[in-house]
Image (tube, rainbow, N blue to C red; front, side, top):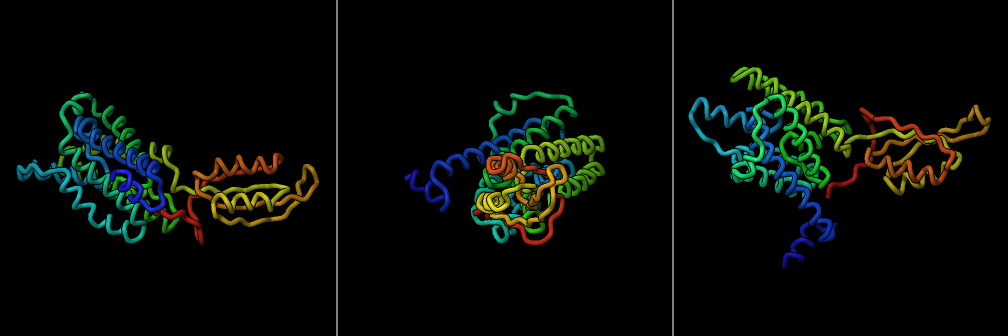
Length: 300
């Protein structure tokens, strides 16, 4: 019965793929909850995104109205609209898996056993901000590698990345700073500043850990353009534009192929192209903005 359920959880995955994906998602959600209950609480930090907004609402309720609001309920309410956007524009299964992360993160944060929370006792706010940010980036990257997200602003960032082909994490960071400024005005400014360090660390580490929504430009100077283009087309489904020129060093005609591909595809492409043409010259450049048609692999 379990095997049948796993096989039908996603129509294009084997049970092994589904199990691996679920393991990554559960690990990511557990790390998020652990981070909130340890580093974030130890430093009294207000992280960015909907997690930070949830903690801010909880703190407002506690300080001004004496209410002990549950983390999970607030998180679920805040994610309602982004989840709808994800179902509508990103993908059904991507959204389902992301909802699983949100559900587990909320419940584990509220009901995590004290024995896990007591593993880390830290009293330095700066250390809490730095290492909490690193752990947060790791948990989010696990979810992204599994083809899901931790919810909230991640849904928005992915939507912008896929629709407009822009790396949106820095824009999300700017929006998070607004939340932290509000927290600083209401409570303690130095906590808000430490929280900015937390979010900055998360953003920088996440950019290093996950490159799935970045694009790279390839300039390939080769004497075997047809074979190289065939590889690019078969491996990535992206097109290419060719320019004919003359190599001044060897005084021979060469063809330069210009193509934009997703960052995770670059390594295997470069390896494959070098096998086709050992004398090839390849220049890889990060693409900050892209206009026009660009093939995006479907989420589902």
